[in-house]
Amino acid sequence: MSEPTTNQRQPALPGLDVEATTVVGIGLGLTGLALGLRPRLAPATLALTALAAALFRNPRRIPPDEPRTIFAVADGHVQEVREVYEHRFVHSDCLRLTTIIGPLDVPICRAPLAGRVAYLEQLTGDHRPLRDPQAAERNQRLYIGLETTWGPMLIAVVAAPLGRWLRCETSLGATLNPGTRIANVRFGGQVDLYVQRDVLDPLVVPGNRILAGRSRLGAVVA
Image (cartoon, rainbow, N blue to C red; front, side, top):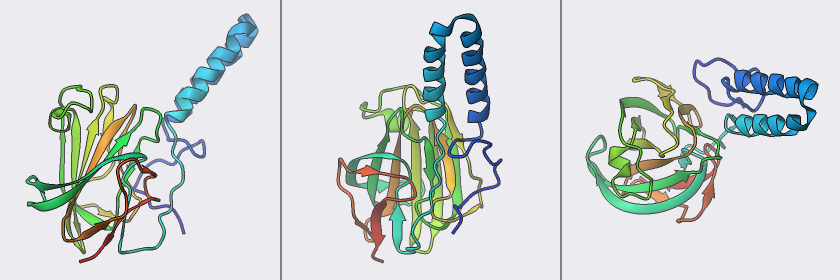
C-alpha cells in the first residue's frame, strides 16, 4: 500500500522533505570547503548539516486500514483531552485532543481520517509561548475543516514562537485519505483536533507519545 500523497514534488533524498535537498547540499559544500581550508571546522559544519536535515524529516507513513479509527495529526505528545464547544466549523460540543509538536519533531501534519476539506483559513498572529492560554487564538494558525462520514471535524495548527513558518499543504474541496499531508509547521507547534463528543471514543491520555498517521487517537462510535 502506498503512502497517501497530494500533488507535491517528490523528495530527492529519501526520508527528507523536498526543501532538504538545498539545505543538505549547501551544508555538504561548506563541509568540503572546511576540509580543504580548515579541517578542524569540518565536524562542526557536518553536525550542523545533520541537524538541519533532521528538521526536514519526511518519514514514510502508511496508516493501517482501519476506517473507524482516527489517527494522530502530528508527531508529539498528547497534552490534553478536553470537552469544549467548537464554534468555528463543527458548531457542537466536542472533544478537543491537543498535541504538542516539539522543535525537533517531524513537522508534517496529516489527515486523521478520510474526508473532504470544507473549510480552510490561515491567520497571521502573535508569537506567544504555547503555555499562554491565549496562544491558540492569537498565534499564527491554520484551520482545516473536514466533512467526513462521521460528521464535521476541525483541525487547528498553531505555530510556536520559533515555528513561524506554517504552510498549508491542502486546498478547499480536496479529498483526503488517512495520512495525507495537510500542513507543515517547523520548530514546534500545537495541533488541536475537534471531534463531536458522541462520535469519538478516545484511546489516548495526556503524556502519550504519538506519531502522525500511525498512532490511534480514538475509535469512531457513531
